[in-house]
Length: 114
Image: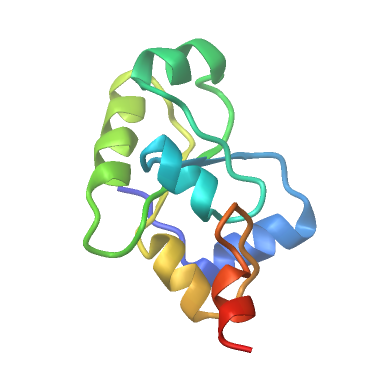
């Protein structure tokens, strides 16, 4: 499995590299909090019908213990995706680094504690 660290992912995003960043969580979790620029699919069929197997793809979910992105990674590889990466730390690791997030619940906790 090809893994990418949060620092490597942050550099890719900051450089504006052309890749698809896929949040593998449920739709409501995607809407609540995600890494900026992330996309979401309702299922494998939707993803396979939208993505190009030749493009670079990075998958992630909530944290190191979450397996959703591992499953999606394997399904993409099984369907011929050759430039696929897994960010195992997910949203929690990204947030721990103080990197920006987007979504409906981002900033709400800060507002309630001020």
